[in-house]
Length: 416
Ligand SMILES: [Zn+2]
Image (cartoon, rainbow, N blue to C red; front, side):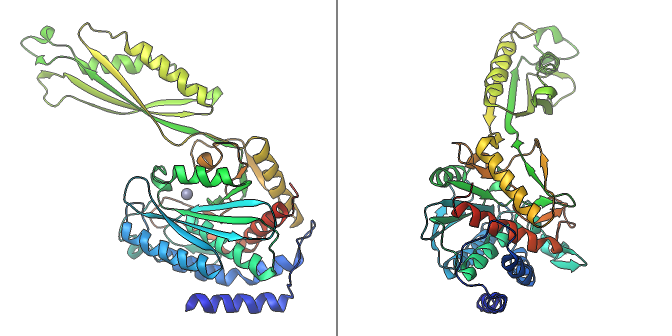
């Protein structure tokens, strides 16, 4: 009911602004900017509704409620909606909507529904507005992105724009835990698209675009030795803890900051009783890479070193688990970035370029087979993943809607 009222408000607002069916201009679109500005209060209402459903990655009930809400929203806007069960994990459902236009260009818009927060977070950190900041768990990461997607489509619909071939929308449920259950879906949908627009949050005060993110690998090393009495006969044992420590020292030169390869030991477990030589040790490293060949090189090096233990009778086993791949914007992505910057320039704004970030997003899965991807189209905010202080900038909402709708207009018109 509330949703229908919102559409009515929006429709009246854009009618007053005088929008009718038309194509997007290449220069500043004053009519679109006016409509985006008029829509700001509605975006805030959407944000409040989204934030008020707790949807931590493991909260199946909350994710289901949020999924149903988004399913209905997309359907009301005219999309064909399907629900795709997560391939692993909680059994949550990813929401996929498809709008069919009259043109040729296929665009995928995506944002994640899950947040990093646990059950009960809303009691500690309810939705609130304070000056130019709207606060709430997940409001930036990435419910702001979901709101921008929904309201971009409302703006496009209200303007009568149908020059796209199709716009697919994906809301997935497990980005914060690595997207293991949705990565294949993301890649498949991106493969069908000509362009992917991803709505992770941006940052205040300097909005930016990212050229590359690092890939992540978990390295798990198990050392097996032999237990013995530490006081009476330590020489009868093989100290797995000492072997592990030696292995840590022998791998110190793998980290290579200059080549954006970061390799750091972060967890160690061994021993249980002070007077027993430990027979087992487990050490874990966090490994970030810029290019896939670095994974092969480091894996080979670790295996080689593991084959030469310090002590006779000890065994070192290395297991590498590849997580989110590295994302590189590439030529297509850089063209999208240039487009976004040009649109911001229409508004007299500058967008910065960040060469690389060590964190990863679903842009990596979307760009796996070369489809151009633009990341960071959500609302600028701060303090993501903090318990009570996550917020978005309210006054940035019109320009983010403008950017998103203009991008789709330009891409649909074949201006790339
Ligand atoms: Zn996120």
